[in-house]
Length: 341
Image (cartoon, rainbow, N blue to C red):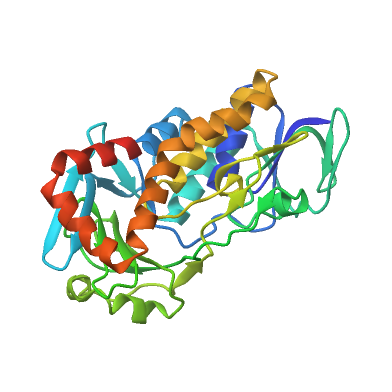
């Protein structure tokens, strides 16, 4: 019987496995896909996420330093630099590959397969043909393990979806730019420099339509994308995932599987890395029951800020006020950005 089985070999799962192995736990990751896996995400790692990657002993993948956050709507803008070191714009595939190399270096075993049904006893979990003392489900936004264990909750609120594509363009800024739509439909476009000649552009909206149609709502941004697109559009959603709790017997949920509000504040990777470390700390201490409270504590600011922004931006009148308010009250905007670092 191994110590820990990790369902999902994405960034959250591999970070969990590396932490566990470094803590002396025999760990196996089970993943059906070949590394690296590309996904629709903003690809911006906040400063706390960069520090978490460094703590894993990772050889940092190539990317582009991020100096802060800038909000843009038509001719108005507001920006706030990070004050705790730079973030990192990085291709999802490069980050995934770097984490896979680190997992291999530390002796993490990765097997190809699916977890399937989960069976628990008083002292073990059986899943994917393996028996372990604990199972961490890091199997993504629409986690099959979470669903099988009945930990998900229905969401009756507005549904939001994300789409992303890359453009061969020299970044015009070291900031992550959030462009707010002037069309009053509550959509945003996120520009993340990920290399010296490449930017990722993700659009988020509650309106289901094609990527190019979404992008047409941002004429100022379109004028800056004067290079070719280099890959197909990738999509994800619905983004909000409500979860009853993060533990069930000997199973813990980590990363997006643990619940998700929205990609609006760009903290997905940083939160995934933080929850991976927290889960392993709780297991290593023999106190898995502490994980729920730890997860709530480390995600609280993100959840409150994201929920607040969603409520305001979900109404046309509110969305129109976000950038002017940030421009008029720089200390308040800077405080919000600091809370997300």
